[in-house]
Every structure is written in C-alpha cells, then in structure tokens.
Length: 192
Image (cartoon, rainbow, N blue to C red; front, side, top):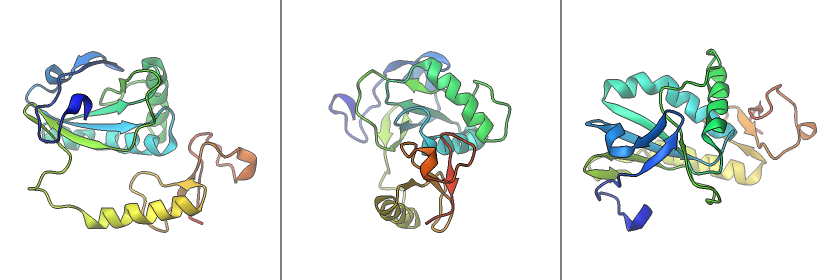
C-alpha cells in the first residue's frame, strides 16, 4: 500500500487523472464502496478481457452500491485509455465508444509493471480479503493451474478462464509464430 498503509487502515484520499476527468477518491466514492483493480498497461490482452467482464458486471456492482475503479499503473495516457476503451467495448460486442461504466486511472511514468490486485475500498478502510469473508479455494486452484500452464507454454489465460478453455497468445509473440485470429492484441487458441 502507498505511504506505508496497511490493509484495514483508512483509505488514502488520492487524486488522479482518469478517463472521466480528475477524481478525488473519497469524493468519487461518496457513501459507496469501491473496487480498485490494477492492470499493467494498454492494451494488455488478459486485462482487456477483465475490463470487458467488469463492464458487463457494472450494473450488478451498482445494485450493491459499489463503484469500479481500474487503476492503470503504467505510462499510458488518458488518451490511450480512451482509445483502449473502444477495443474493450468492441470485445464485448458493443459499439466501440470511449465510454465505459467506470473510469480508468492514469498513473505516473516509469512505474514498475503492476500485479493483478483487487482492493475493496470504503471511506474507513481498505480490504483485500477480510477475515469475515472466506477464501475461494476453487479460484486458488484455478490460479495455480494457470500459473503452471503459463510457465510451461507461451500463453496467458483470459478472464474467467477454466482449465481446458481457450487461452491467449502473448502479445510478445509475432503473428507468424502462431495461428492468427485476426485480432492483434486478442489472439486466442485452444489450450495446448
């Protein structure tokens, strides 16, 4: 956590430039909870599937008074995020507009690549997984399976991936080395 913050501490009231303009975290949240989740940079293929799924689930989170706030810990600009938003909407089979049901935050230049992290934020505290909420060991097993597969093969696993499902070609692999799907940063293939 920034500034020596610990899980359960008061959430820091940062301000940042986003695809929805400049926000102050506490003002943006108001009396809502927020879910902050990170992605490394635009247009990361796995993150595209995650943000697409988050956009589809945004109405369900809104029913629960929860706001989604993707954090982009990368050098990508707000303009890059807006352009990527078009791709995320197209991935969802919707009109490719710059509008998503949540803002994407632009962070500082030269930051290290971020991990996939999710924080649940409310005015009083930041939670990763509180003691009152049981862990999902099916998810832990899914993550271990993905880690083993991606360590052995040059692939990534998309949002909601299950063992045996389609995987994604890493964006660092030239198209001539795999079977092109017609989508430059969203190339998928059957699990090897």
